[in-house]
Amino acid sequence: MIKVVDLHKSFGRQKVLKGINLEIRPGEITAIIGRSGSGKTVLIKHIVGLLKPDKGHIFIDGIDITQADAKTLKQIRKRFGMLFQEAALFDSMTVGENIAFPLREHTKLSEKEIKRIVREKLELVGLPGTENKMPSELSGGMKKRVGLARAIVLEPEIVIYDEPTTGLDPISSASIYELILEMERHLNITSIIISHDVPTIFAVANRVAVLSKGRIVMCDEAEKVLRSDDPEIKNFLTAQMQKFHTKLSQLWF
Image 1 (cartoon, helix red, strand yellow):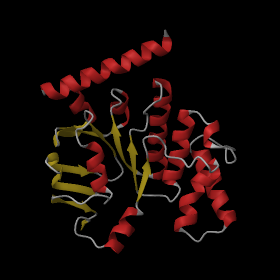
Image 2 (cartoon, one colour):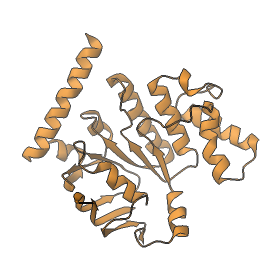
Image 3 (cartoon, rainbow, N blue to C red):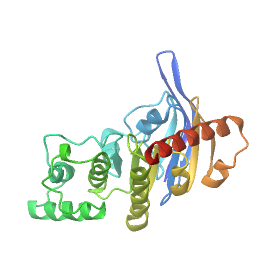
Image 4 (cartoon, rainbow, N blue to C red):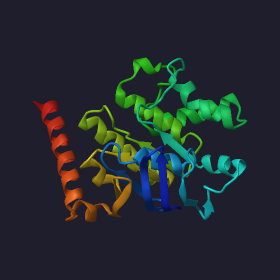
C-alpha cells in the first residue's frame, strides 16, 4: 500500500532523514520505533504529504505523492485518519461535536445521519453516551478514545497513531492497543504506529521498523526484531523495557 524509497530530508544543516526505505503492507499494523529525534514524526509528515522530501519518493498504491498535484494529494489525504499524540481535541466543543467535525467539513450528510455515525463510533471505542461531555471532563485514556473515534469517522483506509499512549499508565496503554487491534479486525484498517511503548508494541504489531539516526536499521516481523542481535537495537529495547517496568512498579507499589 505504501512504499518509501530513498527518502532524504534536511532542515538547514541538520540531516533528519538519510535514505529511508520502508514498505507498509495493507491490512497490517506496522510500528515505527526509535529514540527521540530519530526522525519518526518527520517521516510520518512525508507519508501524509505534509512535507516534501529533498530527495526520494513515496508511493501510495502506485501514486508518487512527492510528484502529485494539489488535487491528487487532497484525495489521497482523505484515505488517512490520524490519532495525535495528545488527542488534539477542541476544548470548546463537546465530544460529539469533536467527532462530527470531519463529517461536517468533508461531507454533505444530514445532521440526523451525522449524529448516528457519531453514536456508532463512540460505541466502537467503548464510550457510548458521552456525546455531550466536554474534553475537560474526560480522563487521558478517554480523550485518546475520542481522538480515535474522530480519526475513523470518515472510515479511512489507513490510520496513523502518533505516540497513542503518551502520558498514560501501563494499564490504560494496554487498553488503547487492544482498541487498535479491534480497529484492524473489524474495519480492516492499515495501521502505522509511532511509539516508544516497548514491550506492548510487540504484542500488537505485525511488523516493526527501527529508525535510528535518520535510517531504518531493521524492518521485519515483530518477533524477529525483538530477537535481533544488533547491539544498537538491543540497547534501545532494553532501555525501553526498563522504563516500562519502572512505570509498572510505580503503579503497583
